Image (cartoon, rainbow, N blue to C red; front, side):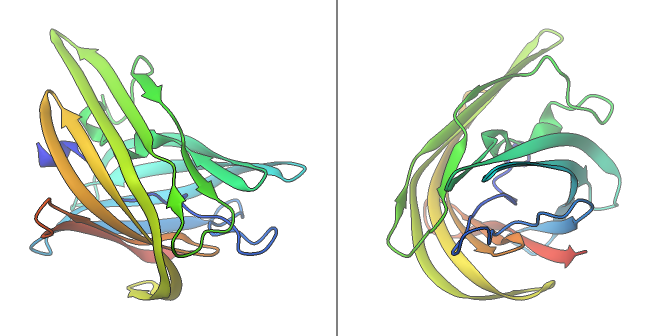
Length: 227
């Protein structure tokens, strides 16, 4: 069941400390590569994010990413496309990133008939330690033959904890540390976790850690390459 849940890369989290200075890349062709590991440091998957299109409208911005999920042998599991929206001083991104879409894939593609409901995750333009952020949720459903697949995720208690240096394989970054609680349901089975995420300007997610309800590390994801 844990393989059906993805509480990993949220590449799009974060906004500006100064006007027009944003956390995520804004150049078409930029590629970010992340690897995920379990609690025993065993690699579980690789995810590549490529910026394919950028649209500007005044202070607003839409950034479209191609997402490619690979297994430990670098075999493509699925690919998808997501557009992130910057509106005014806030960033909004698709909460479906909290669901492992590999569970829905067919021949490496995400079927168009998947039903997605919920709200987009909101991030302020000037996050600072002590900020409390809005909750977010998503539900995805699809009928596979005679089986009705349904997954949901609710992200609550979102907080900005600190600004600190964070070192990963891709380098050392000035990271904005966020924490949250994720309550998920997969085919009627519930999984609760606590997440810690670090984001850097001009990059996005640098590292994500997922803990069980007892505070034990269950998995982590980190940036290994930026090009």
